[in-house]
Length: 119
Image 1 (cartoon, rainbow, N blue to C red):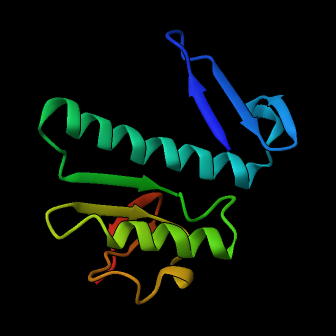
Image 2 (cartoon, rainbow, N blue to C red):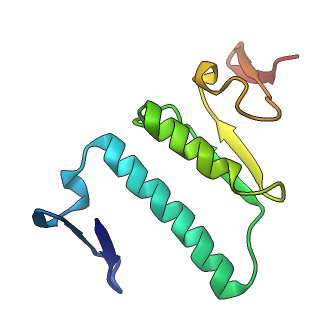
């Protein structure tokens, strides 16, 4: 599969046996994989272009939406390659699928319409 962006950020996507199609023609899970690929690609481009990398990555409900089991496992593999100098924060409502996957966990509960850290 080939994904190209022009100067106006218009995408051209090509795949074997399909000449040309758009981002909207993908399923939600495929779109999320494309989005994550672009996220990690832009992080790498910024690192190469600026000779500086960010040490912070925040993923808000990324694991809660359209990723299937393989998508979750592949994303976890990518996150494990980021190194110890990257501070990764995962915000999720589905803690059960992430239990034991990270070094630390902060859990919040809602009490009287306010979020409070669970102790």
